Amino acid sequence: MIIAIDGPAAAGKGTLARRIAAALGLPYLDTGLLYRAVGRRVLDSGADPANPEAATTAARSLTEADFQRTDLRGPEADKAASQVASIPAVRAALLQFQRHYGATIGAVLDGRDIGTIIFPNADVKLFVTASLEARTQRRYAEILGRGEAVSLEDVRADLAARDEADRTRTAAPLVQAADATLLDTSAMDADAAFAKALALVQAKAAPRL
Ligand code: DC
Image (cartoon, rainbow, N blue to C red; front, side, top):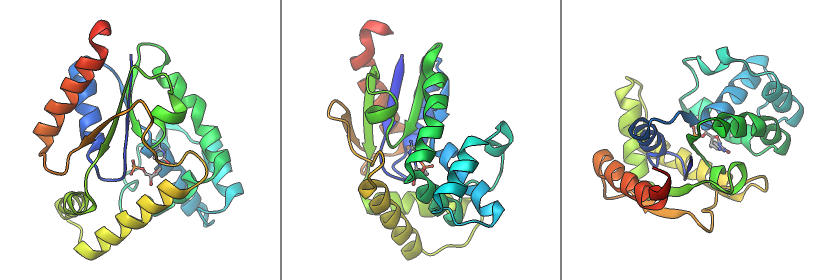
Protein backbone atom coordinates (compact mmCIF):
# COMPACT_ATOMS: atom_id res chain seq x y z
CA MET A 1 0.00 0.00 0.00
CA ILE A 2 1.57 3.26 -1.15
CA ILE A 3 0.01 6.55 -0.08
CA ALA A 4 1.42 9.60 -1.87
CA ILE A 5 0.89 13.01 -0.30
CA ASP A 6 2.09 15.99 -2.31
CA GLY A 7 1.57 19.73 -2.05
CA PRO A 8 3.24 23.09 -1.47
CA ALA A 9 5.36 24.08 1.54
CA ALA A 10 3.63 24.42 4.92
CA ALA A 11 0.33 22.93 3.73
CA GLY A 12 0.38 20.49 6.65
CA LYS A 13 1.43 17.45 4.58
CA GLY A 14 3.97 16.21 7.11
CA THR A 15 1.59 16.21 10.07
CA LEU A 16 -1.11 14.54 8.00
CA ALA A 17 1.20 11.94 6.50
CA ARG A 18 2.66 11.02 9.89
CA ARG A 19 -0.79 10.58 11.43
CA ILE A 20 -2.12 8.56 8.50
CA ALA A 21 0.94 6.30 8.65
CA ALA A 22 0.43 5.74 12.39
CA ALA A 23 -3.29 5.03 11.91
CA LEU A 24 -2.60 2.42 9.20
CA GLY A 25 0.57 0.94 10.72
CA LEU A 26 2.73 1.98 7.75
CA PRO A 27 6.22 3.54 7.73
CA TYR A 28 6.41 7.24 6.92
CA LEU A 29 9.03 8.99 4.79
CA ASP A 30 9.37 12.77 4.74
CA THR A 31 11.08 13.11 1.35
CA GLY A 32 11.71 16.84 1.88
CA LEU A 33 14.32 15.79 4.44
CA LEU A 34 16.37 14.17 1.68
CA TYR A 35 16.62 17.46 -0.21
CA ARG A 36 17.22 19.36 3.03
CA ALA A 37 20.11 17.03 3.93
CA VAL A 38 21.65 17.50 0.48
CA GLY A 39 21.34 21.28 0.74
CA ARG A 40 22.94 21.27 4.18
CA ARG A 41 25.91 19.23 3.01
CA VAL A 42 26.51 21.61 0.12
CA LEU A 43 26.34 24.61 2.46
CA ASP A 44 28.82 22.86 4.81
CA SER A 45 31.26 22.41 1.96
CA GLY A 46 31.13 26.14 1.22
CA ALA A 47 29.67 25.57 -2.26
CA ASP A 48 26.54 27.12 -3.77
CA PRO A 49 23.45 24.85 -3.48
CA ALA A 50 22.62 25.82 -7.08
CA ASN A 51 25.90 24.25 -8.25
CA PRO A 52 24.97 20.95 -9.97
CA GLU A 53 28.32 19.18 -9.36
CA ALA A 54 28.47 20.03 -5.67
CA ALA A 55 24.80 19.14 -5.11
CA THR A 56 25.02 15.86 -7.04
CA THR A 57 28.14 14.78 -5.13
CA ALA A 58 26.30 15.51 -1.87
CA ALA A 59 23.18 13.61 -2.99
CA ARG A 60 25.27 10.54 -3.83
CA SER A 61 27.02 10.47 -0.48
CA LEU A 62 24.19 10.95 2.04
CA THR A 63 24.34 8.82 5.17
CA GLU A 64 21.91 8.19 8.01
CA ALA A 65 23.70 10.84 10.09
CA ASP A 66 22.69 13.53 7.60
CA PHE A 67 19.03 13.01 8.51
CA GLN A 68 19.66 13.25 12.25
CA ARG A 69 20.98 16.82 12.02
CA THR A 70 19.11 19.47 13.95
CA ASP A 71 19.69 22.23 11.38
CA LEU A 72 17.55 20.89 8.54
CA ARG A 73 14.77 23.43 9.14
CA GLY A 74 14.80 27.21 8.94
CA PRO A 75 15.06 29.74 6.09
CA GLU A 76 18.61 28.84 5.00
CA ALA A 77 17.87 25.10 4.86
CA ASP A 78 14.50 25.76 3.13
CA LYS A 79 16.15 27.73 0.36
CA ALA A 80 19.07 25.34 -0.13
CA ALA A 81 16.67 22.36 -0.31
CA SER A 82 14.59 24.04 -2.97
CA GLN A 83 17.71 24.92 -4.97
CA VAL A 84 19.24 21.43 -4.96
CA ALA A 85 15.79 19.95 -5.70
CA SER A 86 15.71 21.69 -9.08
CA ILE A 87 18.82 19.78 -10.27
CA PRO A 88 17.84 16.64 -12.27
CA ALA A 89 20.93 14.61 -11.23
CA VAL A 90 20.13 15.25 -7.56
CA ARG A 91 16.58 13.97 -8.06
CA ALA A 92 17.91 10.95 -9.97
CA ALA A 93 20.32 10.13 -7.12
CA LEU A 94 17.47 10.13 -4.57
CA LEU A 95 14.89 8.26 -6.64
CA GLN A 96 15.77 4.63 -5.92
CA PHE A 97 16.02 5.21 -2.18
CA GLN A 98 12.44 6.50 -2.16
CA ARG A 99 11.14 3.63 -4.29
CA HIS A 100 12.90 1.02 -2.17
CA TYR A 101 11.55 2.58 0.98
CA GLY A 102 8.01 1.71 -0.07
CA ALA A 103 8.85 -1.63 -1.64
CA THR A 104 8.42 -4.05 1.27
CA ILE A 105 5.29 -3.37 3.30
CA GLY A 106 4.34 -0.07 1.66
CA ALA A 107 4.59 3.43 3.06
CA VAL A 108 3.16 6.89 3.33
CA LEU A 109 5.47 9.39 1.60
CA ASP A 110 5.10 13.14 1.42
CA GLY A 111 6.80 15.51 -0.99
CA ARG A 112 6.28 17.25 -4.31
CA ASP A 113 6.53 14.49 -6.93
CA ILE A 114 5.51 11.31 -5.09
CA GLY A 115 2.29 10.78 -7.04
CA THR A 116 3.70 11.99 -10.36
CA ILE A 117 7.24 10.54 -10.55
CA ILE A 118 8.22 8.36 -7.59
CA PHE A 119 5.04 6.26 -7.34
CA PRO A 120 2.83 7.03 -10.35
CA ASN A 121 0.82 3.88 -9.48
CA ALA A 122 0.33 4.74 -5.80
CA ASP A 123 -2.82 3.26 -4.25
CA VAL A 124 -3.91 6.65 -2.92
CA LYS A 125 -2.77 10.13 -3.98
CA LEU A 126 -3.66 13.24 -2.05
CA PHE A 127 -2.70 16.75 -3.12
CA VAL A 128 -2.80 18.75 0.09
CA THR A 129 -2.85 22.51 -0.20
CA ALA A 130 -3.95 25.67 1.62
CA SER A 131 -4.01 29.36 0.77
CA LEU A 132 -0.74 31.27 1.00
CA GLU A 133 -2.21 33.21 3.93
CA ALA A 134 -3.15 30.08 5.89
CA ARG A 135 0.26 28.51 5.23
CA THR A 136 2.03 31.71 6.23
CA GLN A 137 0.18 31.83 9.56
CA ARG A 138 0.98 28.17 10.30
CA ARG A 139 4.67 28.44 9.41
CA TYR A 140 4.95 31.70 11.39
CA ALA A 141 3.47 30.03 14.49
CA GLU A 142 5.79 27.04 14.02
CA ILE A 143 8.90 29.25 13.85
CA LEU A 144 7.85 31.28 16.89
CA GLY A 145 7.16 27.98 18.65
CA ARG A 146 10.79 27.01 18.11
CA GLY A 147 11.72 30.22 19.92
CA GLU A 148 13.12 31.91 16.80
CA ALA A 149 12.38 35.48 15.71
CA VAL A 150 10.89 36.12 12.28
CA SER A 151 8.52 38.58 10.61
CA LEU A 152 5.22 37.49 9.06
CA GLU A 153 6.20 39.31 5.85
CA ASP A 154 9.45 37.34 5.55
CA VAL A 155 7.65 34.04 6.09
CA ARG A 156 5.08 34.93 3.41
CA ALA A 157 7.77 36.04 0.94
CA ASP A 158 9.89 32.91 1.53
CA LEU A 159 6.92 30.58 1.04
CA ALA A 160 5.79 32.39 -2.12
CA ALA A 161 9.32 32.29 -3.57
CA ARG A 162 9.74 28.58 -2.78
CA ASP A 163 6.30 27.73 -4.24
CA GLU A 164 7.19 29.56 -7.41
CA ALA A 165 10.57 27.81 -7.71
CA ASP A 166 9.07 24.36 -6.98
CA ARG A 167 6.19 24.83 -9.45
CA THR A 168 8.16 26.28 -12.34
CA ARG A 169 11.31 24.13 -12.35
CA THR A 170 11.62 21.73 -15.26
CA ALA A 171 12.68 18.69 -13.20
CA ALA A 172 9.67 17.10 -11.50
CA PRO A 173 7.78 20.35 -10.83
CA LEU A 174 5.17 20.54 -8.10
CA VAL A 175 1.91 19.68 -9.83
CA GLN A 176 -1.23 17.81 -8.83
CA ALA A 177 -1.27 14.33 -10.41
CA ALA A 178 -4.27 13.86 -12.70
CA ASP A 179 -5.61 11.10 -10.43
CA ALA A 180 -4.87 12.80 -7.08
CA THR A 181 -7.63 14.00 -4.76
CA LEU A 182 -7.35 17.67 -3.80
CA LEU A 183 -7.59 18.48 -0.10
CA ASP A 184 -7.63 22.21 0.70
CA THR A 185 -6.99 22.61 4.42
CA SER A 186 -7.20 26.44 4.52
CA ALA A 187 -10.26 26.40 6.77
CA MET A 188 -9.39 23.24 8.74
CA ASP A 189 -7.42 22.70 11.91
CA ALA A 190 -5.01 19.75 12.09
CA ASP A 191 -7.62 17.34 13.53
CA ALA A 192 -10.24 18.21 10.91
CA ALA A 193 -7.66 17.84 8.12
CA PHE A 194 -6.61 14.45 9.48
CA ALA A 195 -10.21 13.20 9.76
CA LYS A 196 -10.91 14.27 6.18
CA ALA A 197 -7.67 12.80 4.81
CA LEU A 198 -8.16 9.49 6.61
CA ALA A 199 -11.71 9.24 5.25
CA LEU A 200 -10.39 9.87 1.72
CA VAL A 201 -7.68 7.24 2.16
CA GLN A 202 -10.15 4.69 3.53
CA ALA A 203 -12.60 5.33 0.69
CA LYS A 204 -9.89 4.98 -1.99
CA ALA A 205 -8.06 2.04 -0.44
CA ALA A 206 -11.03 0.19 1.05
CA PRO A 207 -10.34 -3.05 -0.82
CA ARG A 208 -6.76 -3.14 0.54
CA LEU A 209 -7.39 -2.19 4.17
O1 DC B 1 8.60 19.40 2.08
P1 DC B 1 9.76 20.33 2.45
O2 DC B 1 9.34 21.76 2.66
O3 DC B 1 10.56 19.81 3.58
O4 DC B 1 10.71 20.32 1.14
C1 DC B 1 11.88 21.08 1.06
C2 DC B 1 12.19 21.36 -0.41
O5 DC B 1 12.55 20.13 -1.04
C3 DC B 1 11.04 21.95 -1.22
O6 DC B 1 11.20 23.34 -1.45
C4 DC B 1 11.07 21.22 -2.53
C5 DC B 1 11.94 20.04 -2.33
N1 DC B 1 11.26 18.75 -2.45
C6 DC B 1 11.12 18.24 -3.71
O7 DC B 1 11.49 18.88 -4.69
N2 DC B 1 10.58 17.00 -3.88
C7 DC B 1 10.15 16.30 -2.83
N3 DC B 1 9.61 15.08 -3.02
C8 DC B 1 10.23 16.84 -1.52
C9 DC B 1 10.79 18.09 -1.37
